[in-house]
Length: 203
Image (tube, rainbow, N blue to C red; front, top):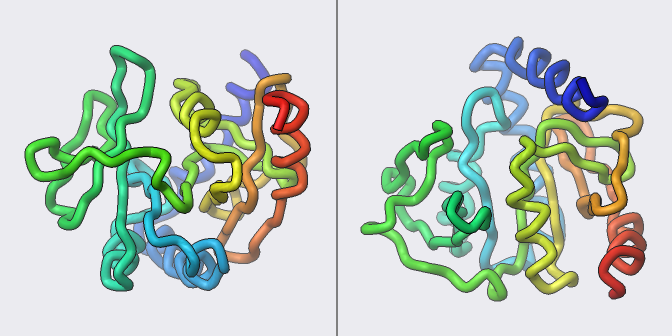
């Protein structure tokens, strides 16, 4: 078993042990911190993700963002092209589980959205470290997507504190996020992300 796979497995088990009430309580604290961040305040259009399983719940966050007048965008996983297709959503009842059980926008009730117009990306993940390192779910969808958008667009992640480890094994293509927001703190990592993008992509 690879080190990354082992970290995914251990962290998922810890996250799964949280009861529903604990997840909601911690998610409320995470939302408060997220909404107070300047990147969130400035953003008109936010790419969220619809949580599934024991992830940090995001439905209330998206509803509250809509109430603030933000444009909320969600991804559809296109397995044929291994890419994310973005759609705007104004009613969170217009979601249905995909083949993996992840809620996604119903095409008939949502509109296609140009990824280049996103102001802020909320990047999901299973494990994070204090340098912005991230382990996703193994599909690489966000890794590919993030390379296609303007590097000035902030990448923020939300996670429970139990998902933070001292250091994640890094591969040459890995890109860190700008900030990780937990129920306890905000971890700033943008300098690491910019440095890595210069090294990998030549920015």
